[in-house]
Length: 156
Image 1 (cartoon, rainbow, N blue to C red):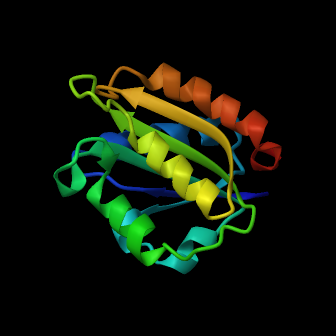
Image 2 (cartoon, rainbow, N blue to C red):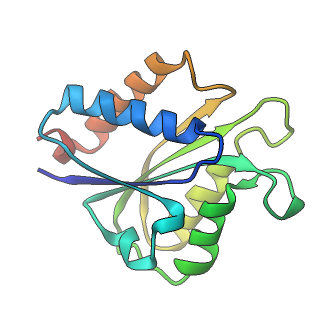
């Protein structure tokens, strides 16, 4: 069975909520699935290479005073500690959260995808949650099923 390694950042708990809902949906659909999850602030560059599939999840923040950026912990990981990481064609998925009150609603997606592609990873699937994630569990469940079809080894 393949290993899904999830790296996420959160302050408000929204991203963690989405990740937890995703893990529950994946485990319901593929009970033998191995999922590792780490908060971005605990991750070192070598950790990015763990597992068979990497999933990065971040909310959209105003890191550095500029709207539409990565959450500060994800920013520190991707722009500093893992800036020289080679993903070696690793299959990846990304989750971005955002708030429609801001012009750059879920621009974290752009930054996550850019990291993956610039570091030799393969973005196979992406997912966006706008506004409060509570009540959007069905959307997460549908994406979990889609994720398993994109990465058949996760469901094996």
